[in-house]
Image (cartoon, rainbow over all chains, first blue to last red; front, side, top):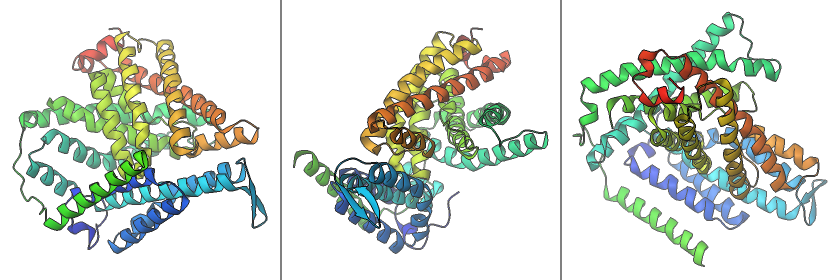
Length: 247
Length: 189
């Protein structure tokens, strides 16, 4: 489902990257200005490269690039207040600071999230959840959805190919494209409902709805280092949040 | 949780994510990332719809970045309103589906504009932000531009989403509808 987690990140307990990602998100929201936000983004990128999943940081640039462009345009170019000339362009000083802060916040969160995705192993996650004695349904929902996504994407592409071979046009005027929504989504939705029926019976015959606790086959090790990282990161994020709210 | 719900939830979440991605790839100024939430609500009730919306948003964040998590609140509001629509046979006809979709779009658009402005400084999905930039160039202030673009896009988006779910559920055979008791009420059977 996800690419090779790399030599370093893959060794962590599955909950450790999850907690670190949430902490980065909290720190990004709490970052007060452009310098702090830029420092957080730089630290996140360096940590991701050191963790052996630098590709995730590069992949994050794809969704980030248009957001950064529009932040610069809306706040830097079209922003109000004091103007400053940079490379012949008259830009809003306050708007530029706001754009850089927001761009770095989004950069840190997106990079951390995509790193988590790149290092996420559904099987290890299910075993970790089962090892804690948490609900089977929760783990099943997360993993079943992640495994369903590539299957649904492949089915959607197959439907598009089939409908195009029957003359459906996905390009052209907006009206043409709106008209294409029905022929593309209906077969996908009907197929999904048929699958719900089949999987419902399959889960019932395996008594999935009655499972409260499941014995993990090969639970991932939760080392002292993992626990220390999680507690330190969590405490750090809470401390920064409290400082921002009450400081 | 019963086995049918355990099977329905991943499918509905995948529908949200896959159709949202497809529409984005088609270059339409719509999201259609709530069809799974609305469908799950119509078939199994608003609590299931809320679960689909919330888990879907968490997984969308995992794949595309957790910056979009606050928009999960909108998915929950959509599930609540779709639940009310279903209890009032709001999917019985095309007209009723569109009317409930527009009402949901109004509420979702208002909420979306607040999240977009306060947390994202007006820069979110590319299509919406392009409209915001255009309105800013026409001289509108940022809050007004964000509100106008969010409302316009959400009204159209939710009207189409409710229309698609309504047409789908009405086309289901009684055998299938019978497995989801709430669906019969939603389409007035």
